[in-house]
Length: 385
Image (cartoon, rainbow, N blue to C red; front, side, top):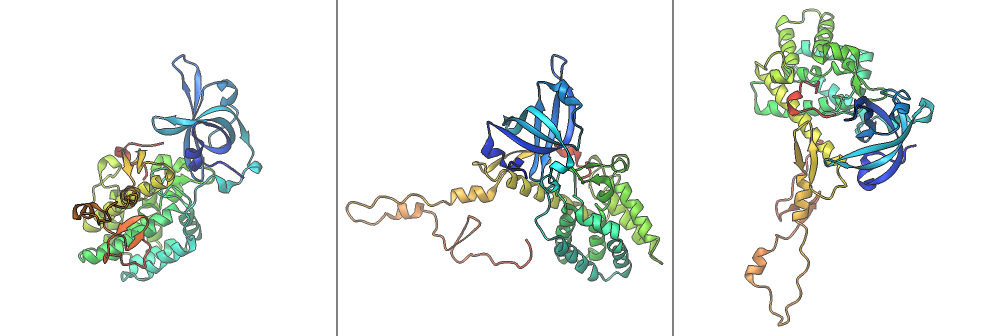
């Protein structure tokens, strides 16, 4: 059992650690002298960590491969405000020496409940053709099992076991809400597009030891894979309208929204446009949530640079929590006089309730809702996000 996880880096800065990781990326690069060094991306269920090996490299180059498990001793410090491990020595581990559950991040949500939520939305469809199509996908045992387990991306967002399902359920909820404000949008068509837009990830990505691309994923990409899957299921549904098929094809190939993000076409009708923006919003909100979680122990409300968003992030909840902390009590007046009006006016309003560290003004308590609430440049959203 691992006793150090990548999420523990803050507590071990400038210390020598010994722990086990999966090798997500292995590269051999030249130093300025021409000698080789190892540049690795290490992973466990809590995240990823860049690592470099500068000395005794010749002995280590052939000792392990990408996706192998390794035990490493090295110095953990920060380089350009990001944690990095300088490797002193390493050795390859056999599968019998590791607990696979330590190395792949997994959703904390209940997979069965997420799947039931998805099924309930499909049951509410009015369009029998679209309902039959999604039932055909969900009734396919191989697709259903993979859909429940696959990550939604390799690194950018929802990059954990169950991430695809988590992402799509979140999208379903957002789509359902937005359709109430835009009655011209076909709810069933929009939800079907949300179900299908990343389904090709189940074949594009492999996620048994680390998250990486399959050969099929590298050569075709998830959009092409999705079109093939769509055509296969539609062929099993008698009388499926050609017009609906064309709309779904367009939603699949346009959901990245812009040519530079890998879309062969731009969204050209309301449901396609809404799918793109809600998909983009959900992925960005998850990227922010994950970064705040990774850096939960940091003192500053500002995070380090987020590569997928192209900026550092401000944890607004932490920022407001610090701002709303009560001031030290003032010393009692020697003459017994009360505070002046100016002094009282400068004080923050009194708390009547507090939620998640945020200041709640009297009479403005929130109404609780029953509903649930590497790195690539920004221009690379085509990354199979």
